[in-house]
Image 1 (cartoon, one colour):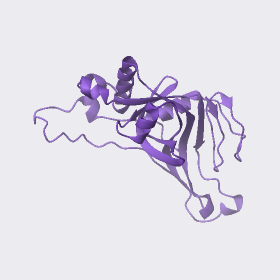
Image 2 (cartoon, rainbow, N blue to C red):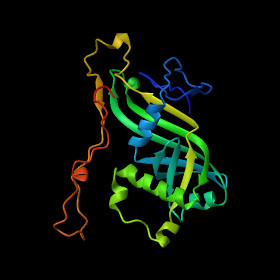
Image 3 (spheres, helix red, strand yellow):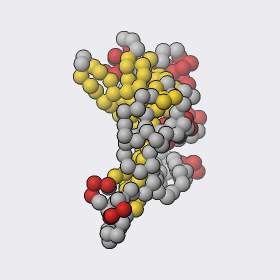
Length: 236
């Protein structure tokens, strides 16, 4: 993995093993932590995939799953991206962004957000071997809810033929983050405006049964108490 530093005020970190040429303002707070990249990819439900189609840039939201050092993208079988991938390897840029906090500063220009953003660049390859397709589909389902692949009907041969997965190596990856409180100028500290961070976290409500579900079918405990993130609260 490779990384680039960020340029937003606050505590800016990047994570991975090798350093790309720096083109941002803050390059003095680099850290090397591939676990931070994996954690953010595993926490996010959706990524945005950019590609070029006949000279035009296209960006689409896609469900993903990380499998080791690869990202698996579940693509619609009738989509243009699936069509392009079927004709050969395709250059992709994938982004994932997680909002962690609203940073409220005394000065208007210093109001910002705490966040984690991952940018992955590389060549996407269509998964064509049946074993890889089955494993990739299971990984995407497990990414939504752990254990769900064992509590769902396997695809029929006709359904399996419609499963389109693209594999993207996690070789060129940049993690940009902002954490911490606002960075007010010293001359603004005496102002009476409130300053600090409003933390942001996903909250999951109670499961709503499908209208055609038998009335006596109980909600499994892992779904009734679903929780995605165990991140500590604070200035994030």
